[in-house]
Amino acid sequence: MTTLHNVGANGESLSSRAYRILLDRLIMLDIQPGEPIMEKQLAEEMGVGRTPLREALKRLESDHLVVTYPRRGTFASQVDVTELAHVSEIRQALEPLAARRAAEAQGGAMREQLLAVLVNIKSLSPNQSQRDLLSYDLSVHRMIYSVTQNEHLSETLIRLDNIATRIWAALSDRLPSLHEHILDHTQLIKHIVAGRPDAAERSAAQHVENFYSMVRGAL
Image (cartoon, rainbow, N blue to C red; front, side):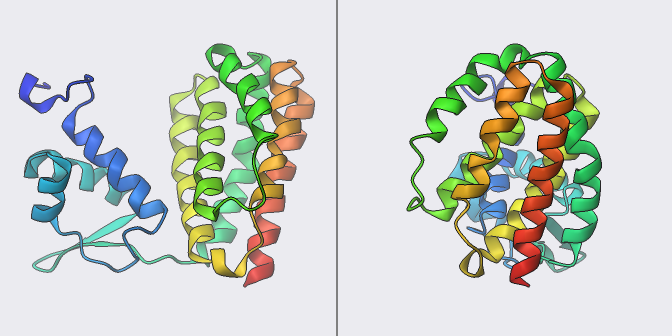
């Protein structure tokens, strides 16, 4: 049971807040692979207790983003680019399904946000930082997953997308700008809000394949 002192001002639990903050830092490599997780320092910095922080770390361990060793502590997991093929194989199967479900709902509760993305994409510059573009890519994917109303599908895809994004971040100095990759979202979102499941499915499959091909080409 969540007690009042374990909940932040906006109703978000302290463990969820710690998880969200650490998740972004791990994905974007603000916490480098292999770097120790300094619990006391992080707890003070985020304004949470050690118990909520440890709950967050358990979730991150199940996401394969941190690893805990007995008597040694917790560390950011290494980025293993060999995981990319396995991650992409599963995403090739599930991303089209998520896109189909989102199109069947014509964007559902996220329809207005998706329409706003179509406008915002036009203002994105190729000169924007890879970090900004990566964050934008993550946010768009998470919107689409949420429309599916399938918690198991959404959670699986979020975890896989996090791993794929982390691999991209690790190789960013060897990869082209994400700008063109993000422009691919335009057609996918148009198909979703127009309620074209078959077209959305094909577009999502191509989007994942393009991502895999770009990263594979840098290895």
